[in-house]
Structure formats: structure tokens, C-alpha cells
Amino acid sequence: MSAISGLYEIAVPVRDLARAVDFYVHLLGFQPALTDRRRRWQFLRLGSTAMLVLQHAATPHRLHLALRVSEHDLDGWHRRLRGYGLPVAGPVALPWLPARSLYFADPDGHDLELIALADQPREAEE
Image 1 (tube, helix red, strand yellow):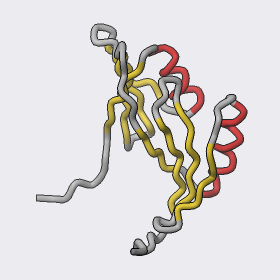
Image 2: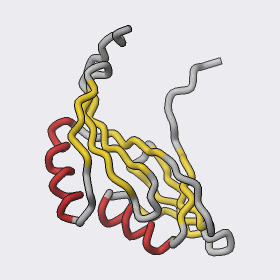
Image 3: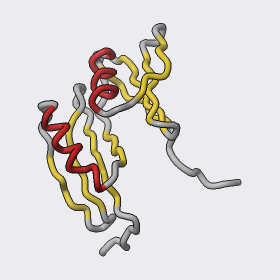
Image 4: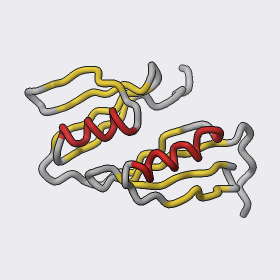
């Protein structure tokens, strides 16, 4: 049996499907894939490596999503998010990974992170 090689799909509950689609497509660059009107779900692709399913829910629970970006692009993402009017924390250094991250929220209050990982992780300090 082979090891799990990655995460392909995650479902995110949202109050307003159209607002969430706009946020993830226009701000973060996801691509619409399939609309399931019966269940009120929108499937979004992130290249060929991942899928995000926005699912309408009257009272969504809060999630944390970390999306990987390049170190080279992190400052540009910071400017883009701030230009969109979002409060952004960071970049925050995470030396134990090593990485740098930006933290912000989507329209439903889900905690989002854009993380730029360095090439070689370091051993965690105890």
C-alpha cells in the first residue's frame, strides 16, 4: 500500500454561496468547476492539485485553511489582501518550519493562512 501523497479536496461551509465564490475566485484565484444547485454547493479548482467545495450552511462552523504560496509572492499577496480591505496579520515568521505566513479571514470568518515554506524544514526545538 502506498502512503497518502497529499490532500485533494476540502469542504467549507458558507452562509452566502455567491459571496464566498466571489471571494475565492476573484481574490484568491480559484477556478469554478461544478455548480450543484440542488445541494447548493460550488466546486472550485486550484490548478490540478486541489479542490475546494463551498457548501451553503445556515450556521457554518469555523475552519482554518492554510494555502501554500511562494516566498517570492508573499509580499504581493499582503498588498493584494490589504487592497481588498481585509485586516491581515503578518507576515509572521515560523522558524520551526521554517516559513512565513499571512493570516486573514474569509467572508464567513474562516481563518485563512497563506504560508510560504522554505525548501528544507528544520527540526522542531523542544
